[in-house]
Length: 170
Image (cartoon, rainbow, N blue to C red; front, side):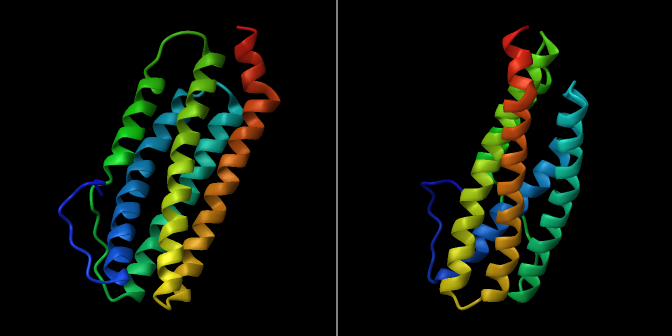
C-alpha cells in the first residue's frame, strides 16, 4: 500500500482487508527471497536460520489465507511496495562481493529490516482485527507476530555471538 494513494476506506474492516492483502504479498515475496538468502549465507547457522524461517513463512502465508476465509474474502495480493524495496536491498546483499563474514552481517541487517517491517504490519493488522471484534483473526496475526519477533531475536543472537565478530576481524 502506498502511503499517499487515493484508496478509500469506509470501515475499519476494509482497512483490515487491505492490510491483509499487503501482508499476503509481502510474505509471498519472502517465500521467494529466503532460499536465495540461505544460498548466499556462508555461516551454516545463518543458512539454517533462513531455511527455518522459510518454513515458518509458508505457515504465515497459510494463516493469512485462513484470515481471508474467516472474513469470507478471497485471498488476494496487493503489491507491497515496501517489501519490494526491502527485497531489492536484500538482493544487493545476496549479490555482493567480498569477505563472506561481512556479507553474512549484511544479510542479517537486510533480514532484520524485513522482520521489523513485518512486525509493524502484523501489529497494526492485529489491532484492527481486535477493534473489529475479530479476535479469531487477531489470534492468527498474533501467532505470526510472535514468530517474526523470535526470528528477529535469533538473527540478533547470531550476529552478536559470532557473525559480527568474524566480520570485524575480516
